[in-house]
Image 1 (cartoon, helix red, strand yellow):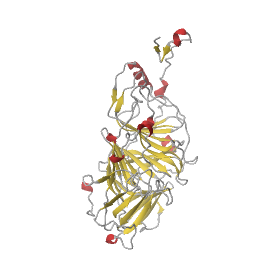
Image 2 (cartoon, rainbow, N blue to C red; image 1 turned 90 degrees about the horizontal axis):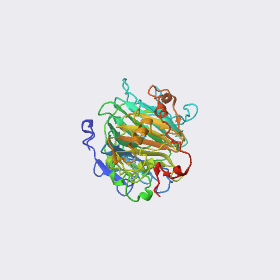
Image 3 (spheres, one colour; image 1 turned 90 degrees about the vertical axis):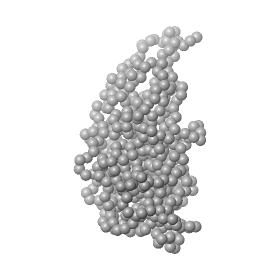
Length: 497
């Protein structure tokens, strides 16, 4: 693999391995991987051996991950890809061995980044965020005019828990208009799940390179160094960050052995490296929600070979095509719960309860009979943060636009707006099959109750009239008394005797 700037042919040069849960290996130079052991006295080509661990050394074998591989999952109109960088998906994560030109420890001391980034939070409490049960919605945030890269364009919306205590989550958004220059970002707090909504991302990691477009997602595991370039110009998107655990494929239960996201559709990057001097190269590390910088004189992307099981969920980078996601839906009556469209989940110790689920609402058919087909009105013990990549969302006729977001916290009622309800009822019981097309909405769902950051509550893009979308709902109660006639009605229809 040539060690030179090849950004001009970044996309066409990408190669991937396939699978999830495998033990992967990749070398940019044949023979760079040691044989028979992980850390020989002298590695091939004079490389340094370095391990990155995503779980503790003494974790049960099925959970022990050596090095995450970034992965990305695309959910386009016709494709949904998940590309992971730095981890291989197994039951959970593991560890990875990297063989690099210089070890990552070769840097100057970390110092607080100046100026400080004032809009990142990783420990949520009354001093930095607020609790509110009100339904919240934000309009799409505009791309800044001043030069802004991925790091400076990152800001927290809400979250719960603490990265210090290794339990919780944060939801961020980003807007950027310039590529990162002579610098790399490392998140020591948790894993990033990035959902671009506008503009592609070229992401370089220690495991290799990947391209992530709107309609795709990328997972950047904890501790992985990466740089973000913007080949299409300005970019905007959503990020979920999880503390203390990792994302994995959900159990399929009664669905059986097939369905939802298939393991064989995941892609892992191949080794790629840079060599040569890079004076003043800056590592920006997020640690406890604060940013620190350290200088070094070489690129961190100097890994010539690697092997491990810590790629998109074990070691490497994952790519998943969302058009290959196999959604399930009711074929007779009633509306299925959104959990039926879970792509990835970060479990808690309590079975069936997620620290965070990533759920999508892709194009699909609606065929239920005598059924209110949009999502039902409900209050949920979970918290739901929604975003829209493109198209519209079936439960909101107005006001929810691509790049926008909404937050419905624990036990806060929500559901279809007035226009959606009235339009659905007007179709009557004889509505035929209907295909929802040209849309991709998603949801981050958590069992924890979030606190909202002040800049999110005070944002000029806050939709203060969001509640109005339900105010127009009127009573359709018929007013019938309980008598013989009403006893002969079921679901509004006469019962045949």
